[in-house]
Image (cartoon, rainbow, N blue to C red; front, side, top):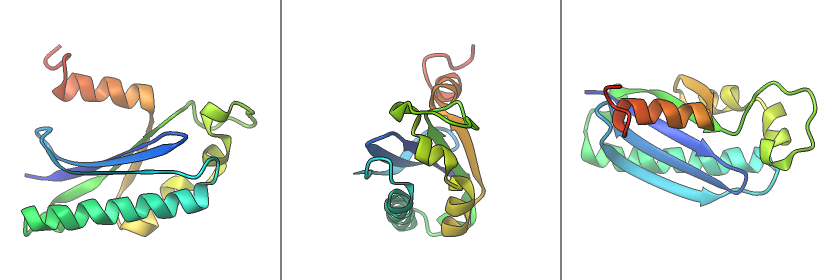
Length: 131
């Protein structure tokens, strides 16, 4: 089967997880992020992604060929012109996050707000599975 990488970005923390497409967690990592500083924060995230990819390579020899992409969840809504709400992470909202992650990982990258990503996960592998 295939693998996917999930990334959750919060104001203070990034979490990265690799799952197979049945939902089994194969590798995970997390690190603190600098407040409101996307450039160094993305470097931290790229390091986490590299770490979980190395861990996955130790589990599955063909892991790189079987990676289907990187899904990102972070506070939304996206595309706000101006916001002073720190929890909406305005500096991250203006940063070219998807392009930077795609260039740094070589993967297709998608973005959802964190609430929608949570609901999607619950429907696929959580309490709402089959609903």
